[in-house]
Length: 403
Image (tube, rainbow, N blue to C red; front, side, top):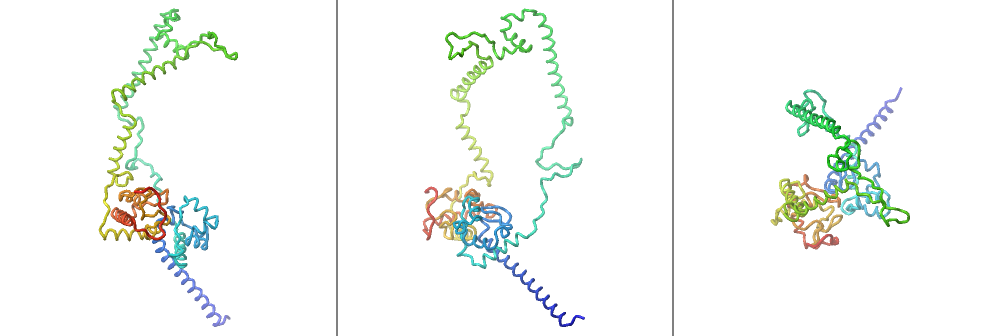
């Protein structure tokens, strides 16, 4: 019989192990919660768990690289690249050599560990099942046609008027062909051997007749087999044959077309030249763009905000979303310096507004439309303009053109 003492001992060990397991799970969950806040405050501008933004998707990054590598990369990615780390160099080259901000001074070891815990927790979440919108609904007599989709109609299901029109047109064409064949068979025998006279053969009717009978000289021309005098080069002799009629007809047609083109575009000026067409199309595009606020070509006429409340709001937005790449004072880190007189995409408030709204994905600048409202984008754009001439410490070298 097992002693009561052994039972109590084993039960105590199991209880302690269970408590340790529960407490470890709770600590890990707490780390992930803290890591989420740090991640959203510093990383969401460039990284996502499931999607590639400026950098790669981070799902299962800990499985591919390991916690130690991730810690080094978060603290100072460029130091890892310069050390020749194979994975770091590959990522740096793959994503257009965009430098990730170094967080070694702004985040503690515990903060970095919490971010990694958050990445692990998000990676382990099961994928959400999303209905495949591309799967067509079950077909049936009562199946609804999606809005905007073109429904195919069988030929026999067309309106009777259209079917009658097609049938009548086909009958007329067939009748014309039959009449032509009958006239051809009736009159050609009546001409007898006169159809072989050179005068008739060279006429339009004769050319058409012999073309229908298989004589292609109306297209290819007639070979004369006459050698040009004194046209002998290294034993190669030149025959005095006419150019093919099809070539001459195309040449004549091009002359007529050229004369008509000159009269239409340059003499009477009834047609628009390429430059005029381009300007008209650009005007039309501007009209269409003005009706669509999400069009990058839409004309905007915002004025920079100057009141203290708007600039303070812009400063807060900048610190939350932009400082990771441009620095807390706009001095430039990964992104360019925003305090000098040089701009890559224009230094007017409307230019800055569009750059913030639509981004420059090729250069690592993410679009903020959908994340910030129009008023917020205008506020942060105005705040950026207010930084001009502030001369912060460690400012990045000028980039772009001087405004």
